[in-house]
Amino acid sequence: MKAIVLHKGGPPEVLQFEDLDLPEPGPGEARVRLRAAGLNHRDIWRRKSYAEAAPVIPGSDGAGVVDAVGSPRDSAWVGREVVIYPGFGWGHREEAPERGFEILGIPSPGTYAEAIVVPVANLVPKPEHMTAMQVASIPVAGLTAWRALFTQGRLMPGQTVLLPGIGSGVAGFALAFAKGAGARVIATSSSDDKLRLAREQGADLVFNYRDEAWESQVKEAVGADGIDLAIDHAGARSIPACLRLVRFGGRVVYLGLTTGETIELNLRPPMWKQAHLIGTLMGSPREFEQMLQWMRVQRYVPEIRHVFPLAEAAKAHAFMEAGKQFGKIMLHI
Ligand SMILES: NC(=O)c1ccc[n+]([C@@H]2O[C@H](COP(=O)([O-])OP(=O)(O)OC[C@H]3O[C@@H](n4cnc5c(N)ncnc54)[C@H](OP(=O)(O)O)[C@@H]3O)[C@@H](O)[C@H]2O)c1
Image 1 (cartoon, helix red, strand yellow):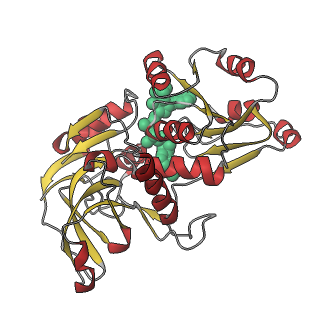
Image 2 (spheres, rainbow, N blue to C red):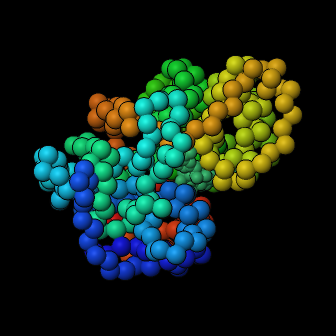
């Protein structure tokens, strides 16, 4: 099979398009012939830092058709269109995964390939109203946004949610889900074009965070009370503003550290406001089912603007690193 293989960490060009043996499923496993894979920012971190001796296939998002299973009891899966739940070992608690929880794709073989073998437990039937490309855009970013908004953020209809950096894949899903839940959405971006697209997709208020006055503009727009919830993926450069903008008893849920991991924080204002700062990581298999069920009922279809052929994964990575995307970047297989 053809696959994108990473031999050592480095710039996008280290992603090589190669021929590999087709993987065979063992007991309790299935082989999925992938039709599409999605990029996540994680793929960039992993590509840059990869230092293991064994070559590996990146990619956490994928959808396709099951063409083989390792155990006869699973034969009903053969021929079915599926999307892959992108985690291993979440466990039974909803509040957090077990220690040792792993995301699909590095160290395990990922989805930038014509085929992948995963446990049957990770297969979920594809919602019929979506294409494989559409559903493959959802797993990591969609699930992360779902958990951040509803499980961790406890978003309620009528509440106001701030989404910094709306160009990101996660923020795009958060916008769709928050509007679906009847919330008011404030989005920020470095790009006026992306803000225009966000408005088209339902954002109520938009601000360019390159403008230093963006925070006071948000404050003025929401009034003295502040926002109910912020979902932040940008990290150090954005979390302090989220904490200042959140209301008394409000929540800042953070899931990414794109602009840095360390902040200096005056602890008094969040204490006084009794604000919640909550970390979150992807989501459980139950949340994945819930999210897909919501999508089935709503006939929700993600909009995809950026598709590259599998062979051009390096170009797709360079595109993501340049921050040119609005929403998900996909690989057609
Ligand atoms: N915890 C989890 O389970 C989980 C899951 C998925 C992703 N993540 C993390 O979330 C982050 C985003 O992931 P992604 O795949 O959605 O990435 P992505 O599509 O590459 O998003 C990058 C976006 O970050 C925004 N950004 C950069 N600097 C910013 C700043 N100072 N303030 C606000 N926004 C800023 C930009 O938005 P504009 O172009 O609009 O300016 C940029 O387009 C990554 O750090 C990733 O590792 C975590």
